[in-house]
Length: 399
Image (cartoon, rainbow, N blue to C red; front, top):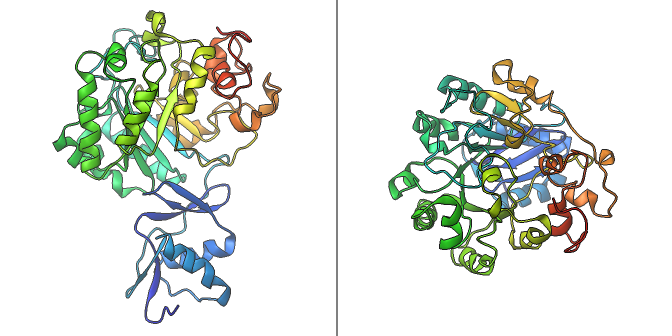
């Protein structure tokens, strides 16, 4: 292949990242490619618009990148990001970003719920717009991959549309987590996120049992509007007492909507779920339903740590925690800086867990918050034990 009179450039949706290893990140397709130092230096020159010197052994690598639309050919230099900063180790790759605790629904299983982490007398909290902009800059600077824009319902943040307009200026993937009830055709067209994860917790009866009357059709319409607008859609489903007989129908619905990622999980008894325990399903009952989920996955380098090795959460009150579930145990305030708070996040190694099964490297102990609810953060997450067949129905402690 001849590249005469043409410059090799990174595709518009690709950026270089300096994580534990040098990487090329495809933001649009959420694919992370580890590369060696030689490939990194070559791609760095391409990103600077320099005419990189080609070696014969580079040919196969370049052909592959062109075929995968990671590189493009241009008649003029294309300058992109410079040499990225080195990430902290371990790298913070995923940021759960709770913009607000405002919500249009009162879901019966919501782990936040009134009083879960709100100060007494404060019913609504919104991260200030200027603070949000600083966080976006710092997350990009420390090599973040996915920004998970959460709430409450993020669309209700007073400055949501200003935030929306700047998202594509940053070198990470933006994912909006929404209940879908507020997403109209017009709103879908305005969104500048790469993906929206919509909560769908059953067919009509199951979904509305926890999210309220009339929400099912709004959620289905939101999925259609987002797909028509060219925005990727993933689905999150919580297993609860009222949707156990609906998963086959849900699976057919996912197929008909051509959903590429379906996350199926078990709610924790926290927030409003503590008041609606009749909806809860034991790990022994719920575990087998996790097989319905598919797609997705994490770009992880930490093989010896439990969940959250590359994730933390910023709460609507400005505190930083291991994840949203650990909001009552913040490690600091975002005013101290994201990197400083990230370096304080407590980490648990697999060898510290009270697990001795053969697949611990695969499940990594499951959710530490669910384990903590059983009285010991080092215990196994029974939901994962049943989901992966380590325990069968009737075995072990199901509480």
